[in-house]
Image (cartoon, rainbow, N blue to C red; front, side, top):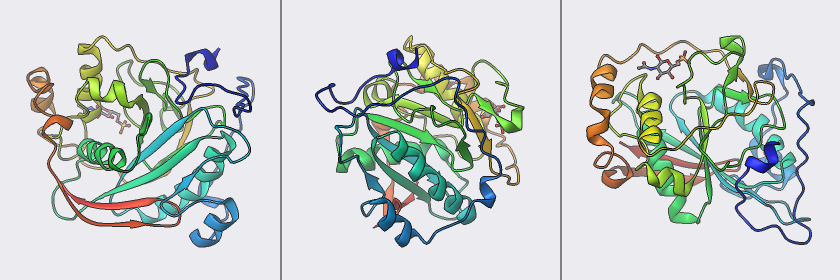
Length: 279
Ligand code: NGS
């Protein structure tokens, strides 16, 4: 039972929100690109979302407290599609959540992993989040039972993606969308900061989990289904294999322990908290 694997953020009490997990229910969402888009201000008002993309249920006590961290640069259309889709999805799960978009300033190659670390650090400054979801904005969860909260072990949430014909390409894949408690994340010193350019940072993170004996959880392929928004592939970085070869030497010294960045700008936008960072 999936529910037994969940790690609650708040103790159960009278009038705790219930979340019914039904493994047979799968909404096969097709073409989220074609869903109607609403103005962010109108959407926030209609759905009762607070500035900075925060929401929690008011008629029951939520069980899960989650920060959703999205690394970002230059993908406005995808961001719009993602936000239109994800708020109703998260509200249906009765989560106490807040969405952070961490945008990398121009010029240097994209550093997905370091942006996750920045998201963790900035989110932690504003609230004592119990659970973190780190995910790419091109991934749309298709099954409403794929609960956006943490499990007893770190969870690979996007193990069943349409572009891989809903198969896991390799057993150590830990990219796309993942969920970790703050404790689990801190235990491995977060992500490595050295992976500029595409590829390898997720493999490095997986090796960090293994080095601490943290087994990875995955829900079944029916539940873990994602639709990937179409975009051009990034050219892989040439440094990624070299960085991976000496991963183990950097576990304790490279991560949230030595994280350095500058916040250039930040705004509480209607559907998310926006942070522009120089990393
Ligand atoms: C591996 C990459 C990972 C990446 C995975 C899936 O080869 O970072 O492919 O990529 N590792 C290295 O490059 C060392 S995907 O097919 O989704 O674009 O996540």
